[in-house]
Amino acid sequence: MGIFTNTYELPYYAVIFASERTEGEKGYGIMAAKMVELASKQKGFLGVESARDTQLGITISYWKTLDDITAWKENAVHQIAQERGKKEWYSRFGLRVCKVERDYFFEV
Image (spheres, rainbow, N blue to C red):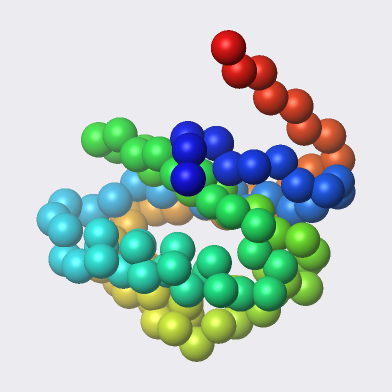
């Protein structure tokens, strides 16, 4: 996968997860990779983009429908990761769900 995920048939939905991590790895990298792998197998999953610096992480996942997002949120393994995130990995986070009605890209 390149830096940007592919564009999809409009409209689609974006889940934007912004976070600040706590100190230490505590298995975060392994779980993050597992979540991307698991999400990619879920109905309606379109793609993911993620970036992190020393303070802020932003992950955007793309979905066909709001129902697909709800099903992912309710996935049992994902719920375990969510709880670990609250207890171990994040000092704070925010989540936004957006409807994408237009997109465009530029490439040299």
